[in-house]
Length: 188
Image (tube, rainbow, N blue to C red; front, top):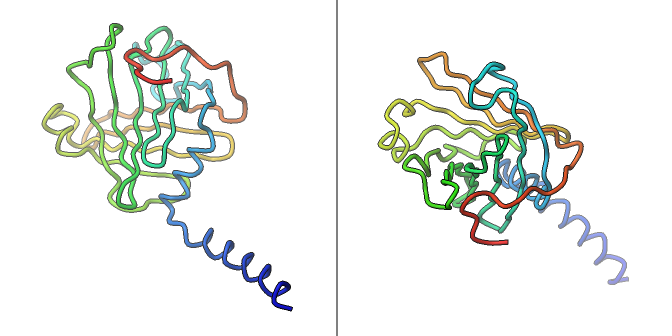
């Protein structure tokens, strides 16, 4: 009889443990599920952006560990951008790693912010941190947020007290061929 009772108890414990996950942990686990995959997307807002408009947009969830997920984001032939998500103390941080073609860091790099709470399982908000405010004073009021559904990953930016709004929508329903390494990539 003991063997019969152990299995239901293990199942119940597994269900309880899954339910005990915070929204940030659920978001993190969902993003990790895409590790190794690349996706194509569109610029949703603003449509006529000179730097991004009309160019092929690709994200590649290239590197995942328990505490860091690196997502290169290509704009046409420009491979300078990587979104770096870290998970520490129950919250997620988003930083922007910008590189030159030779791999050296751009003078404007490592800006972003840390979520002020565990957020929601399908959306995380990242208000600009002090490092960002010091590096880019005009970005001190930036708020980035990332949403994920079964079919879409969106990267969003809103600069408070301005008209600056930016939104990229990536199609998670279909993977694409894995792109080349981003500029400055050190690992495989």
